[in-house]
Image 1: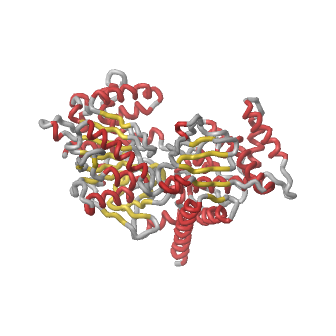
Image 2: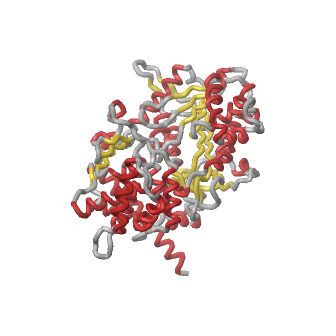
Image 3: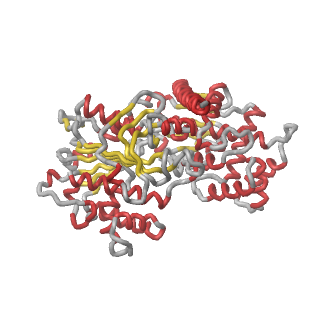
Length: 567
């Protein structure tokens, strides 16, 4: 009888640690700077250690460096950040017009600029969630850097031979000179506290990433900066520009983004047409509509959307993607290039301009006798956390045409969200159909009538789960105890994600309070599982779905389009 009580206590401790982390991060943002080795940095690190997030694996181990967590983090931080003592988080401040070369991480749409040998500027234009995400990753890096430094010392506090030899290897690698790779793996094994096999596998994973430094380079520089701080008082520092502090939380980039989209709607005379918003990636809707027709003569696969999409995802099918884009552009698609800094791309599809013979037959599209009733699809790329509220809130506001008294209401008929989420029951690739979103750590909850049902997606060989989704403050801060609480308690949550409650907050404000859009618009939410943080080897740090993500992505996409066209 004691175990449930202990589990609840551990879950409560973890939730408290999450709240303390976010309070501390917000305070530091307002203050303007902090030193990871100072009291503020220690507060962040202590709470991260209490939390022990699943994605950071062995962070609390005093000797073993977390290799999967490092790979995950460096896919999301700019290359070279491991060499920089000074990290400055900025907003869009004109560096895109400078001669500094922008550095973009493989897995995050954020630009960074290497100002000099010691300093890196990183753009934050996607709201508080983006800032908190990067601060969490940096805190993890500093924890692992201190671990590497400790591993580099012998029992008398002297530098081990392996550390000196790693420095030589990092220097040779930088200059493009050869070195004995297996010997280097052995030195690295000692400094990382991992087995030889683990180090070899990790080094190969890092080597496969073009915009990520090698594990030799990263290990040396993380340990070196920790050494300089602890031995020579050369402190590391994270700071926030005054412009970032002023603009964060004020929808600055969201308003620029939404106005640019509405400008195109006005220019194309689409404001009086039924509008269907789809939050998804920028390829699945286009492929579902046009890929079978665009590739019919070139791909020897079945004619279904799924078969064609799977073929396009293979290396030999990738050259054909341009053919799909060209056909879409000739049939009513407009690409809205984002210049606002929000990093949310948009595609508009005017179905009145589509040749119905070219649209995939399984979508049930039919030409409209009255072109003024033909739907317009607005596909917006994934938002990030709190940015989902900012972007949707601004998109659903009436458009006041600059320089005139003209006002256009947004003629939204449906909002459709296809999201990636962590699943709490099931495996990668399974589906979740929510009936509510619950904010983690608060009493805020958003039940809604989902036009999708579990039954619509059953019978396709994937697990399908229905119930509430937890909107978390950050996926990198989730641990087993918190997730098990949401799964096993009366919340009966099926998964966790970062945008749902933010979208619902904006939608409910527009439909029920501002009344700026149709209060009876259809809501359709469906998620596919990118990970299961409760299963070892299935967290986000274990890698992406790859080709296995094609089936759930296109099952959801096809259901969204069929529902829109059947209306």
